[in-house]
Figure 1 (cartoon, rainbow, N blue to C red):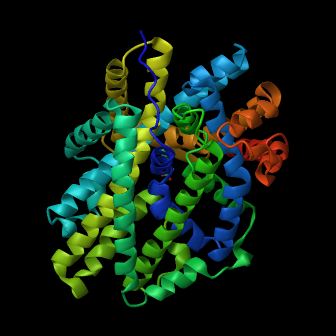
Figure 2 (cartoon, rainbow, N blue to C red; figure 1 turned 90 degrees about the vertical axis):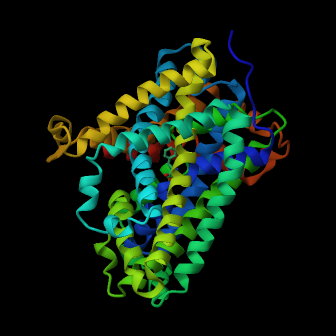
Figure 3 (tube, rainbow, N blue to C red; figure 1 turned 60 degrees about the horizontal axis):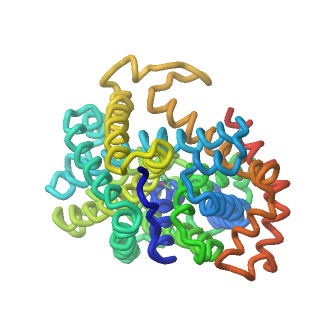
Length: 462
Ligand code: PHE
């Protein structure tokens, strides 16, 4: 017997849970640095346009599909796809993708937890040593931190939708906002902070080219948790009375606002420590920013606020990053979990045990790609570089399959489910929707240029 399906208790519950998914490591570091390197305000403008005009329609399609089918992504495609192999395959991909992304996101979350632990016990000087990260990733303590993170995720998911995901989000998301605002206020009080704001906000349109534009789109797509089956799954936990359209808009606005605000923390901090920083020298990799760059920023504060003050600031920063990461991790692991529960008719407990075993083994394999096991560190070569297991998961699922999943959902709406069915579904809980500009825009865009653009992005990354 499968379990009675759980639902979010309210619109705000859904919005916080979905915003918890969307607000992740990408918002705190990836977005601000990408903006600063790629034209400041000009990048922000392009990013905002992509969120509103490309991502929001895809988001509504995912949520609409999930609520209509009341199923996980595989079940949704199976139920509404009339058993056609192409749509069944799309559903399979929509569950496999989050599972694989969960693996590499888990590795990063475990590292963040480790850094949080070390910052909190006063090891900031160790973290700030440039050679520390290399040792840390190959240390056996990884397993201990992995067990802790796995436990936290499982305790939340064991509670189900209302008592688990929603309850955690209602507590963690406000905490995240408070920590972020505290750090912004603190950072803005430092000398030279305003330099960072300048680089972040003053538009430089000369930097905008094809690769910046496609980078902005990928960043927006990833940041809103699209193409990962998450919004199909969360949409299925929505009641028919609830207004998906307004909720979707609020999630997009919250995610973008948090990313924007994070820039007011990240950039001023970088320039306060070194006013001569060349924005182009900042690393594109969020991983090296978080684990190598930030501890050095915090240790540099020792001169002005003392070691204890610097450690407290670093601890709040890693706690913020951890909260952002854990709420995303919960959402992404819920997707395959929901698929096992529904498709196999098992209990949540059994499904989570299977997921727990599978993610632990694969996370350890991915985590040994940093020198610990040479065969995994130098796993394959392509594109002129040697790639580790971790890199392969990243390149395949993150870079390539995400836009493909976005494309598939547009094609599903366009060719099979029909646009009118989506519109009807979105009008449930929002009867005026079909008369709005948004509805007219979605009607045109999702059956023409949005799939075309996603197709181009997909082909480019292949
Ligand atoms: N939106 C998240 C971020 O910006 C991405 C993500 C969501 C990753 C869910 C994993 C799981 O970091």
